[in-house]
Image (cartoon, rainbow, N blue to C red; front, top):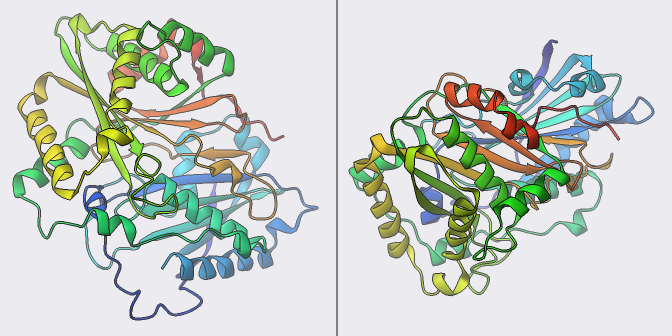
Amino acid sequence: MNIEILSRETIKPSIPTNDVRKTWKISLLDQFSPALYVPVLFFYNSKLSNPIISSPVLDLLKKSLSETLTIYYPLAEAQTNWSLEKFLEKPDLTFLNNFLPCNGNCLEKSGSSQTLAAFQTTKFRCGGIVIGACILHKVVDAVSISGFMSSWAKITGGSRDQVIYPDFSTVSTIFPPRNSMPNDFLMNFENFYFKGSKFNKMKRYVFDNKSIKALQAKSSSQMVPNPTRIEALTAFICKHVMKSYRTGKSKVLMVTHAVNLRHRLEQMLKSNSFGNIIWLAYGFNDAKENKIDLTDVAEMTREMFDSLRTENLEGIDSNDMFDALSEVLGSLSKINEQLKILRFTSWCNLGFYKVDFGWGTPIWVAYMGDMVGFPSKQHFLLLESGQKSEMELWMSCEEEDMHNLENDEEFLEFAVPNPRICLH
């Protein structure tokens, strides 16, 4: 399978940004976000009867992107010699990065000349298109990406009146940025995200509705009688990652989840607030002989999320957040050798499968391919599939753990490795 780049363009706002809006004040939460590009891929099915593969449609995408940029203060064009149906029959995860305009989840050098967003459209033979987006995490979280893509799609489809305009100012007013960060904080922050082993491979597993309900039942307890899908899957994944870890030496397990604060701070923030409005919920489990009980992790995960309830966040400010993050990062640096960090993110219920440019909703929303050549902590992304009752797990972890999971019969009883994507 080959991809041929046909053109590259820099897309500018259709109306020049006025002087008042040229400088955008970031918030403390933006400062806490790593300088990397968040990748996401939208696959659309379209037969020749639909003019999607014609150049006027690509011109329309560029024009509507230019209009979207006026709201949200380089588009690459490519084509492949494969059919969409053939590619999705057995998705080649190693090839996914070819659909992206730049390296996703790779630490970038900060600078004023950084591209904030890049997009690539790739046409498949016999119809079909994939739109790849990479947007700088320093300015967006997944909710903001979804809002941007939704606005772009609505403008493309002629429904600009349905666009929800983002709020840029509230979050930086409530959580103003710090003028500088202490060196030890910056070092601990980078170690948390990027130091350690190189995790190159990306794997995809799908949990169907039957498996999810079974895991919810297995994870239930008196404390958490009705675990959510996220709580149950988090517990199941943690159990089997730690089970695959070499025995003989106990590990302290740290689990983190990126949590959207918009609805938790709804009296302070607007639902359309733009930027990084997320915080890390985290918990620890002392894994004796690396054995973990499903109910223990489900209870820990519930406690993590409960710690970020609205009543617990009342009156919180930038100083509180900086002090809290400094404390946890500092403590992690002292127990690094005995610590195993599993970082979770959920993209469920963010509306990615509703992004319709006028030719239907995506048949598949994908993450990215292998993380080649740079260090990162283990990363687990949970994403709903096109079949709404299913959940996808995208994971990168140590080679030994990956190998053991691939041969873990109990894990594979519930998780199907990289199944085909249904076109209908």
